Amino acid sequence: MITFDHVTKIYEGDVKAVDDVAFTVEKGDICVLLGPSGCGKTTLLRMVNRLESITEGEIRINGKSNRDLDTIELRRSIGYVIQSNGLFPNMTIEENVTVVPSLLGWDRKKKRERYHTLMELVGLDPAEYRKRYPHELSGGQQQRVGVARALAADPPVMLMDEPFGALDPITRERLQDEFIQIQREVKKTILFVSHDIDEAIKMGNKIVLMRDGKIMQHDTPSEILVHPKNEFVSRFVGKDRAIKNLSLHTVEDLQKEIGLGDINETIQDTKTVNIHQDLRNTLSTLMNQEAEQVIVTDDHGEKLGTVTIDHVQRYLHLEIREKAPVSTEG
Amino acid sequence: MERKKFVSLMVRYGFYALVIYFFVWSFQKNYFSYLFKETETFVLLTRQHLELVAVSSLLAIAVALPSAVLVTRPRFRQTEWIFTNLANLGQTIPVLAVLALMISILGLGFKTAVFALFIYSVLPIFRNTVAGLNSIDDRLIDAAKGMGMKPHQILFRVELPNAAYSIMAGIRTAIVINVGTAAFAFLIGGGGLGVWIFTGIRLFDNSALLSGAVPVTLLAILADYLLRLLEYVVVPKGTRPSANA
Ligand SMILES: Nc1ncnc2c1ncn2[C@@H]1O[C@H](COP(=O)(O)OP(=O)(O)OP(=O)(O)O)[C@@H](O)[C@H]1O
Ligand SMILES: [Mg+2]
Image (cartoon, rainbow over the protein chains, first blue to last red):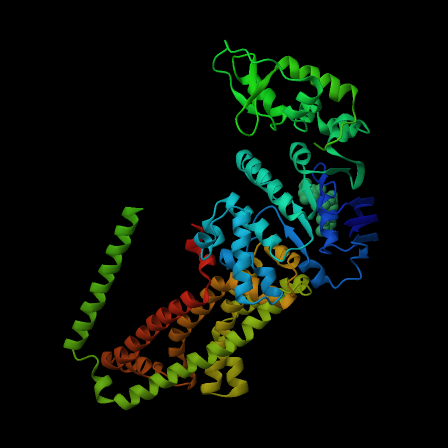
């Protein structure tokens, strides 16, 4: 649990980068710090592991002020991932991943085991990469190693500053998906900086939307989409927020509310979607094919029914316009 | 690319051919007679030469490395320009001025020669080390801090290894030049192979000249080769320039 207790940061020369910020990140949550460039996201993040000093207020980790902890120990107990170039070029991949365990004085065998576990977790072959150097890896692979390194000493808290920012859209999406999987296993308390609303909606249990160092709104992704608190939030979220919101709902949600259509056997060549697919992707599938409908299947490939654009529209109306706020669970 | 390789190979072999021709020619003319007639003197002069180079280079490294590390520490960052300017200023002072000054303090001899060589080695090493340390991406230092490294761990595990290539290049250049410059030590009574070279020049004795000059050249090439080997050992594989090509 990370608590920001009226935190203010003033840089030399009177730049107020963070202005009286107060919120809490619950244990096991991913909280996304979102906002335009220069709004103070990085500053806020770096005050947690004291890479920046706190001008006023207090940051507590599990109830203890981070001022009272030893800086070095504090940092070793927090995983830190940055956008790019965070890997040490002089060290092999194995040395990079086990930097913090080395600092903590783990023995060789324990480090080796940890290296194996972590590389498998982030989907890289431990043996293949052990002796390689960072420059021999692609950007996506480097970023995976960066995540593995941050997880190395199993820190309860992770700080991630635009970890997937420098990647192409396809790789970024894949790493986001993988990271969500990893988080399901490791259940860290994560502060995640992003300036991409789609990434925030996808990754966050909560979003803190900032502007000029102040919090504009602190809410669940769906609340931010459905009930933007002010003009700035709704502009930041964008005109297509209803569509964005669809990515928070699955075909299963739609089935529960309004049911699926019958399967019309005469229509050939229709595509299928999994019942756990989100509605935004389902809608794109519908719009990208000639047919009116897609067939919904369960995890075993069993056909359950169909979805049409009309279904999606009705659900959107019912669920998002009228019944809001919608919970993110489910 | 292929063409470039070909040309550089041709140049290299052409050069080797010239060197071999030169040796054959000088042997025929008996230009290396001194080496055989006065082997003892040769050994003595070579030892003096190596001592001049070794002492002045080690002193230069011992002074340049720590001071470069010092001026790049955050606390001194603001004052770094003073040191860099001082170093640059040092480079522009003529050799003779320094020598004249040192002769009047230390007198003629080995010490003065070492001091002069030291002055001229210290600057390239210092500047290369500072440049190497400064060229390290700030984000790297940031990551190191964020992982919980202490300042000395950042220096030894991140900064120095990543600057090693630049530092080693500075040391190698300085020492190789030093081997050549040490020939001038004779002029201030410092001994070394310069003794034969300058005697040869004065007496128009090609034999003496070459018996001094050729070993100096070979020493310089040998030093370069050995230091490249050392570089290969010291510089981490992931930070060599070819690595990022
Ligand atoms: N070391 C510093 N000294 C002075 N001002 C700074 C410093 N670091 C950041 N700032 C200022 O503080 C404000 C917030 O910067 P910060 O880096 O936290 O923004 P950000 O939200 O992370 O932006 P981005 O999305 O571009 O990374 C900016 O106005 C910036 O210029
Ligand atoms: Mg930032």
